[in-house]
Image (cartoon, rainbow, N blue to C red):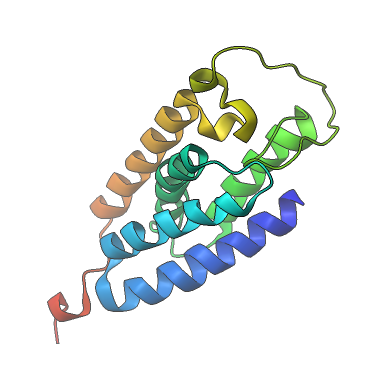
Length: 159
């Protein structure tokens, strides 16, 4: 599940949606359009919540688009996505994006308030994931901008 969803979602959201929007409207618009769409699709998961979808839109939407921008290759965003899903599910037996927990290498028990643990949606819906993933995404966006990898809208490009 982790491999197929990571590859499929990155091809669809970063490769197709982000790529098509970026071609016409630039990198920043592509980020702003693809992130909420990516987050909202997670409402379809068995225990999907609006809060979880919002957190994913911000943290993963920024992080995964930012992973694509410096290289213009999907391998890094697919790798981040796969590592997140595998670590949560296959290693720690945790809930991933509101899907039911699967047996992993370690059977973990996560206790605490929902804002810290993510509750029934999983760690993605925690303040810790929001802060760490969003920060990493912003760092990569700054790297992309400094390297000249931010695509302007078509009307701002030289002829």
